[in-house]
Image (tube, rainbow, N blue to C red; front, top):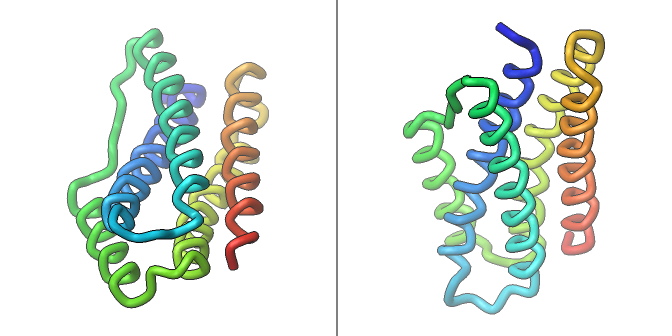
Length: 145
């Protein structure tokens, strides 16, 4: 498989899970008065941006997109619901999001290191931009711990 395409597919899968879980989280926080909601919404918008940009690249290359399985999404959804029900404080929400984004950023960092010599510079820079977004999101969320 073309490494450029594989890298974009990885970004799409990460964004797909990020978007899905954040949308579920925001649904569960809808009636709550959390200060963290604005930051969560901003992070969601960035995931959407990277998702759409990656999708356009794959479409241009004639490759299909790959979203996460329904089972993994349902598991994440139930986990979010349980966590918010137990503790919906900004600190708890921030910790949950940091853990999720951290898993994605670790995987992204591995992909970048594995493909640094195989992918085009433009695609590598896009992947690095996505990783930087993840790292910046984690830093922003730490303010709520």
